[in-house]
Image 1 (cartoon, each protein chain N blue to C red):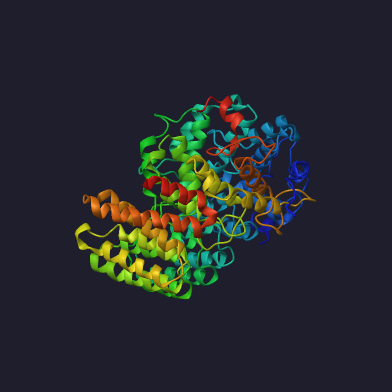
Image 2 (cartoon, chains in turn orange, blue):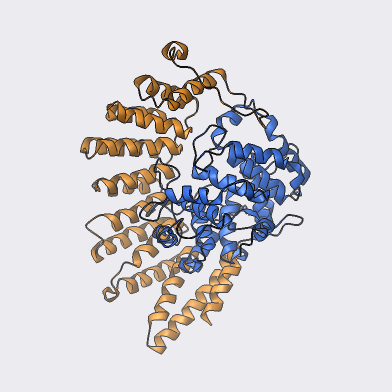
Amino acid sequence: MDFETVFSDVLPIPLDEGPNPISPIAYPAEYSQAMDYFRACARANEKSQRVLDLTAAIIELNPAHYTVWKVRQECLIALNADMRQELEYATEVGLEHHKNYQVWHHREVVVTQIGYDEAVIKKELGYIHAQFKIDSKNYHAWSYRQWLVKYFNYWSEELKEVDGLIELDCRNNSAWNHRYYYFTNRPEGFSDDDLKSEITFSLAHVRKTPNNESPWNYLRGISKKASPASGIVDSLVNDVKNLIQENEFIVHGASFLLDIVESRIAQEADESKKSVDSQYAKKLCNDLMKYDIIRLKFWTYRLSLLS
Amino acid sequence: MTPKLAVAKHVTYVQELDNKKDSFEYWAGEHLRLNGVYWGLTSVHLLKHPEALDSAQIIEYVMSCQHTNGAFGGHIGHDPHLLYTLSAVQILATLDALDRIDADQIATYVKSLQQPDGSFSGDEYNEIDTRFSYCAVNCLSLLNRLRQPYIDVDRAVEFIHSCKNFDGGYGSVPGAESHSGQIFCCVGALAILGRLELIETDRLGWWLAERQLKNGGLNGRPEKLEDVCYSWWVLSCLSIMDRIHWINRDSLVDFILNAQDTEGGGIADRPGDVSDVFHTLFGVAGLSLLGYPDLEPVDPRYCMPCSVIKRLGIQ
């Protein structure tokens, strides 16, 4: 962009760092010049195509400049710009800067301006999918996806996406978190039947990777959703006990059982059942102290809670 | 063999940051310049060399980033933002210069960022994140304005609590994945607000202790790489919850010390990488929490020297 020609009627405003700047920054000339015109246009509150182009030029040099993004949005709205085209632009920048807060937030602003449009939502989900191919744990991408599907109440692709990502990498904690988000936020809710099939799904994964923290945490989270009379938790406890016996010691499995058995002790009225559970919980603690030495003090503390 | 903490090298490293203005990293990082000053200043204070930086010069620089509404931008001429307003207040508090600012005016600015659900945005741009809840609470606490009419404390607590996940951790917004950095923001804010009873201490404590890997380092989420900055995000929470002994101290100390640049100074994200001022602060602060000798004690809620928090009369 030839700034001097485009902004020939504008007096650029240089950065005022005061008389004795503690640390004057040596900006590259192009960036410095672009910012001088940007300051002038911002002060004049100019919202125009040329300012829009100027923001793109600055973003190319410094995509984390939050004020420039804000002015860009104001220009887009003032010019009644094509927001679908703007998404293409955000994609271009976003594929280069995966973890830039501003460009992810920009998508949210632009999509909100467009409003409900299934084609746009699908395209956004496709864009997020492309980001997952680069980094399937990108916190920004996941947060944006959660916002998008909830805002537009559009849940139809979520389970398929999460299934695919867990299939690819069952240690992807972000995907497990989104699985929980899906079941607990979609309007249909989470029935005991859903819970049963999710338990089957998670157990299949812990069988494959017993030391994978994510499905164990997921199991812990969903098992709290069981209706007390359903007996689901008791049968889960038996399944996990068997699993532990079939394998070498599983720290996460034992820790999971300890949590559940502890809460069962707290609720149980029958003293003899309580005592059986209590003995079992102590055994789990002792095993954990032996096998998870790095967290020895934690398990010692847990054992002390039982006596 | 693990080296000792190279105190003198780190102090020189921070002092010389200001001479590297022509490097690409420096100017591209200008939008968080004020954060950088806070990281460097707090580092030298924790290293017990507060004289290493010129206080008067820093105060003048900070004041030159202030806007007429009381808030601060990331650098001279940059728009106001909560992230930089917190850094500015932290710097001025550390240098005992809070009399340079109008606390009521800043508190009014922070209030203007609170949303009806109790959350905070970082500026008028409306991005919501528990990071901003933390910034608001920390900032107002340092200014002794943590009350009505400034912010609705109960609502702020409610929003943070709504970000608690099934694994006991916290994310950036309700439902977002637990992340050690966000957990620090939520636990830190709840600690400052005296609402630690909302935390599932044992559950969260275990999740945090699980962040320690075999090499001693801590990661931010399950199955992610270890990083020195998590020595701070994870340890500070364990310290707030009085559970710091749940992780293995010696192996973490070794991990941090091995991430030092013992020649050029500074600490990197992990052994073998290039050091930067951000990881320098969080490495040193982590060592301070772990009781490494000859360091100034750090307050786990504020990431500032305990002596400063005490001087401000904060319990």
